[in-house]
Length: 82
Image (tube, rainbow, N blue to C red; front, side, top):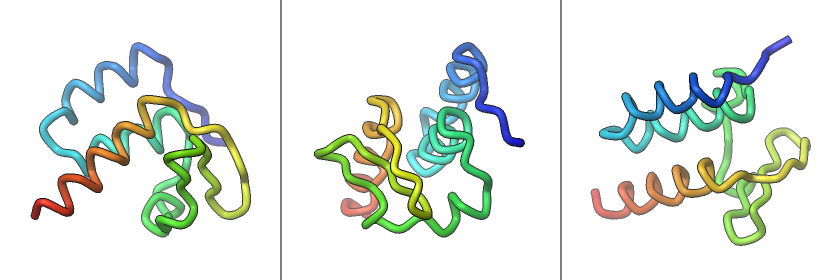
């Protein structure tokens, strides 16, 4: 069973991912929400509700923490700029 990273582990990896918005999202989804890689690769935008702070991967509705919401919003802004 996947286990989420500790807060300190997330902080360490997040520091390394600061320069890459996509990597920051992966860190948040894997480290905070313990989503497996295959689920992260197939996550759709309609499974993310930034305004309502909800994440619904594969029908598992869960609250979306501020770190993950910010990482996703930053990645989407980065993607729009590119």
